[in-house]
Length: 193
Image (cartoon, rainbow, N blue to C red; front, side):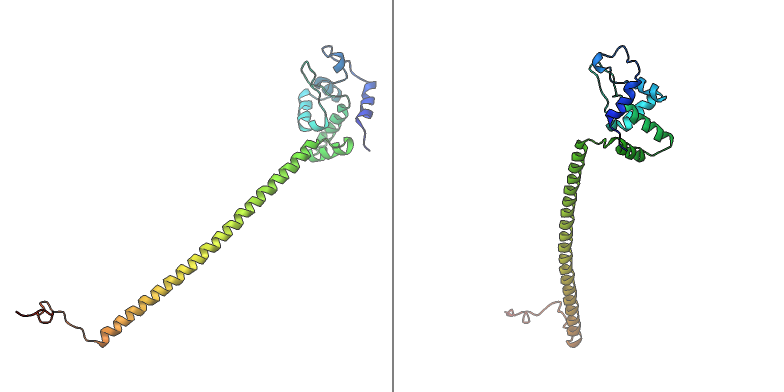
């Protein structure tokens, strides 16, 4: 069953503490951390810790003169937090109970932020996929060039082997021609004048 802040505040308006004398009349409907701690029977540091963990459900008030205040219905929120913490409930369980009892404490700006974050992640993912596709394309091109180089290398090695075999055959079929150390002038085509 969901209770509204108004129902919760009606319960506490009947038994309200005397407001601090330093509070102005406009802020007297708000409770400070010490008053909340007194009503819950916990320390002020515990109230401060609860506030920092579940601020979106508490609607804290910062009066013009400084300090912090809470609406009286925040006591119900603090009580639920205290009771669940004493039962060793997890943060998620407490948050779910607060949402069930008091409604969503998440502001719409967080939803917009989540959507914006999601869009950013999608854009990053698309950019990464484009880079991956480009890398695959480059890898295919490198592999094509490598295949051509390997084919050229095989052709060159085959041509070299064939040339060596031809030279070997020529060397075996033709007798070696001795080189003359001092060739005759006649053999070189010069006249013997």
